[in-house]
Length: 509
Image 1 (spheres, rainbow, N blue to C red):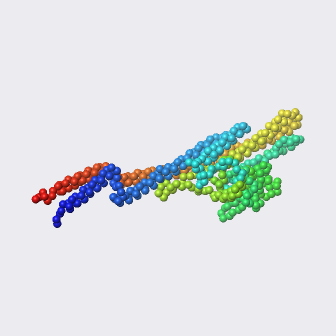
Image 2: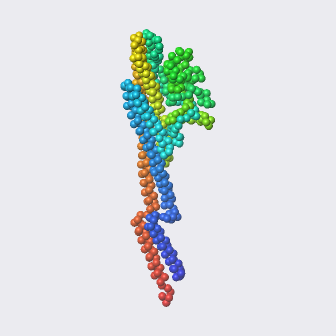
Image 3: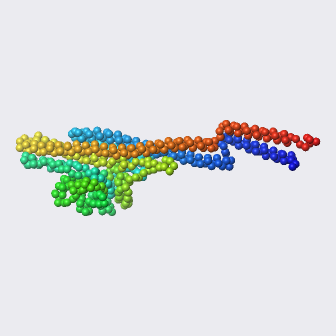
């Protein structure tokens, strides 16, 4: 085969071009420290890089955004609950003071005022707290505050509240009609005697409830007992429950109420106090059967900072302005889940109903009422003492002295009940603190799990970064060697071409 100069020249150009391309590739690798610049250069490296980069983007989203946001939410939640726990500790001292002494009138008022402030701090400052504009303890309704921001009398609620047999309180009530009456003798005053009756009471989560059904409804009060496969209903409609005001003299003594009014009720719904007085028969049935029960009742006037019923209970709401009826299901298990790993979610929120017991408010309502009873009997004693000081009639003095003795006996009974009420406050704080501690423990367990997830994701991110670097990054030594080899090859091709093409046929003639 005859090889011409043209063939040698063309072939040399190809070799030089290839050498230049290799040198260009080596120079790009050295400059960018990347193995390839275009997917076509090495499809295997390109496909692996896409996979690793996708994984890196996902890991970055989880570690730097999802997990961090979840941690911030849970940190804020834990901070609020820890402040409440500290508040409970402070409240215990005041309840203990009221339970173990006979505080003077001003001191009682100061104690109650301070306890009210603590309750306000628990709900307004902590339970109603928000994170980045989202309310933390309101379940799915993160755009709605836990408490009413203003007073409202345009919303009517029919509320369903659930109880257990252990939620029934045994309380003592003083029945008394001891007061000064013109013309009464010492013997007549001596017959006046305060009596203590034991009753059974259920406290609803609200006071100042309504004695009328909501618009479009027909139910004022209904209590449904469930035990085994049996359900019993006690309501105003079937005549087993009476509706009374707390101002009724026998509101808390159902037997006397039935005796005086000729009724046969098994329970009294004391609507303005938000309480139910149970008869002995109904109480015995509940305790014997260990029955769970639910109570449906209505409320239509809310003060500023009252808790929204839908945050704790299943309820129907009617708006008298828009004439719109809204149904709220039981708010249980309204979990806000964050995706913190591949196919892994974590609940970050805690609901108010699982952390903050509304019994705090109702306990203070009861203490305020019994403090008022003590203050009332003290005022009656003071009035009698003034009358004694302003008369010289010995018979009148003797009669008033007997009245005073009867009032002092009533005072002792009411002080004893007041001390019990403060003691109930201590029990209430312990119960509420136990509920809060469970919520804190659950949050802590989830937080620990989140930290472990974060650590694992950080390790995965580091491993993926290393794999990505190994796949597409050039080693500096390899880049220098490759560039040197490519340059040597290019120079060699130029040199060889110069020698070959430097000779022609004329050189040999």
